[in-house]
Structure formats: structure tokens, C-alpha cells
Image (cartoon, rainbow, N blue to C red; front, side):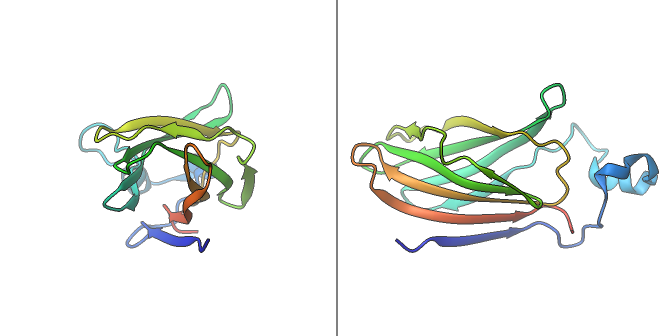
Length: 156
């Protein structure tokens, strides 16, 4: 099956900020990274928008006590059958993680949103997230759709 490649580039008009050197940031750098109006914005990305499937990153957060980066997904399965989401490799910046051994996540057929979370052992996210995602038939485990997704969040 041909993998669909999706690029989401959020770097237009953004300045490169090194999160390892936050103690050197100017007030303008802090405002760009953490906008002052209202609560902090969640990092949300529409990954796939098809008539029968919607897949989004709802939020990204970090737990410093675990040194883990969590990504919460929102999916809506409007297909006739239940599906599973299976991850392959993820790349956070230049570090590779293999999630292929994780069990696929069952997504029932529904017009309601279904939320789930995956995580990797990584804390100092700088600029890019990439991931392989397969959508499987829940019964046969046949690959229905395959995606290679790359999200440029901040300039490199």
C-alpha cells in the first residue's frame, strides 16, 4: 500500500528559539513561545481529514518527573467497521522511537470523538515531530490507510 505523505508546517513567521537556553531568552522570545493573552495555547494539529476518518493531535504535554512527552489524539471513525490505529516509528527532532510493538488502539465506529494518548521518553522537544500511522481493519488487521506525517512546529 502506498503511504500518504502529509506535511504540516507551522514555522512560517516564527523565530528559532532554543528551549535548552530559555534562561537567555528576551521578553519577546517568551511572548512568542508563551503568548500572553489567555491561558497557554495547546498544540493542536489536524493530521487527517477525510469523509470517513478524522485524526488530530489534541494536545502535547510533558511530565518532567517521568521525562516523558505525551501526545493526546482525537479520532473520529465514520467507517462501516471498527478500526485500529497502529503506530510505527516516531521521530521527535532527530531522535527515533519505535512504537510498532505497542498494541494497536481500537477505535469503534461512531460519530463521536474518541481520545487516546501515546508517549515517548523524551523531554527537550525543539522543532519537529514525525510519525508513521497505519489504520487497520479491526477484524482482519488489513491496512486500510497508511500515513507518514511530519509536523514542523518551530524553525530548526
